[in-house]
Amino acid sequence: SRAYNRIINNHHVPIPTKVSIIKAYLLAGGMFQSGTWGEIPPQAFTKLHFSIMKLYRKCTNNLFDKKHPHKQILSDNDIIEQFGFQSPASIIRASRLHLFARIVSKKSEYLLKILRIINDLITGWSKVLKKDLQVMEVSNVKFFKGTGVLSIQQWEDKICENSNQFHN
Image 1 (cartoon, rainbow, N blue to C red):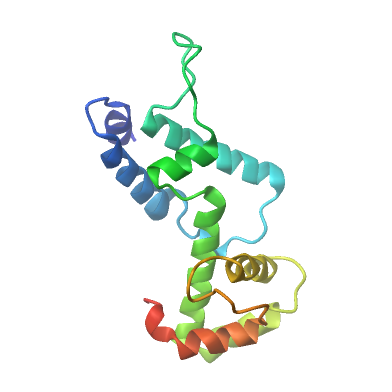
Image 2: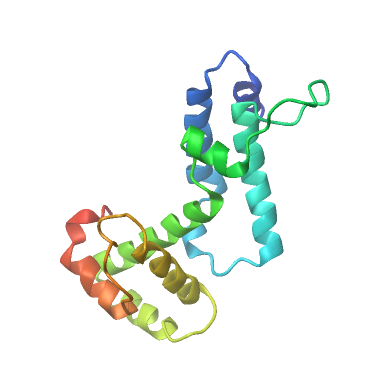
């Protein structure tokens, strides 16, 4: 939108303010419902990653400039690290794990039955959910740390036992 671009392009708006706006924009709009996405084809993910990084670069004024061709440009990882952004893959992973935790925490037998049925599929949402859980099992996040490889049913049980750690 025009108002959004006026803020992001305004050099008088502090970068931390722009960072907060970008985060809100991505979570509330651009990546809304990304927790329902299945596996993203590599070409599509590359486009998504590029689009989000372009927003991050614009916000932090870390774009290539023909007028200053020798300007030091940060890598994607450096921009994410220095300004506290989430990587595009992490945004999707967090959304998908949040959706899974909500389904389990709500204890809807209908939804849990669907979840258990799709658990056996080798493609789609359940496949990437399993990958997300595997990534988190080796992370430094306390809830996931040291859990080893658990089945979806075991994750359901763990979430139910610790439902106070999840907000609906």
